[in-house]
Length: 105
Ligand code: SF4
Image 1 (tube, rainbow, N blue to C red):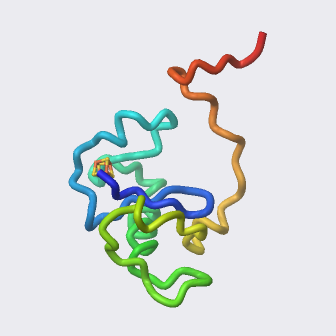
Image 2: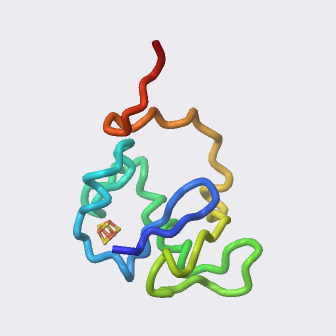
């Protein structure tokens, strides 16, 4: 499905376009994707914030994204929700184990 939209620092799943197929959860190498019912309590703010990415007017934009029908055609949004934008930066994720990249020697 084409329902994962690109913000600045993170990706957002459009809850109106997601069909809960689970494909993204299977391939995410940093285990960043949860079914709503499995979301850890400490991550619960991100459920509403992810939805707000589509329903609220983001900084620098004039209208909410809504459900444009596909991330590929819509293109990178290039901005995050205020909650995500305010998060401290983290270390880069390790290379995907199936990417063929080695970590050194
Ligand atoms: S579960 Fe993931 S891959 Fe499947 S439709 Fe939803 S966001 Fe897209």
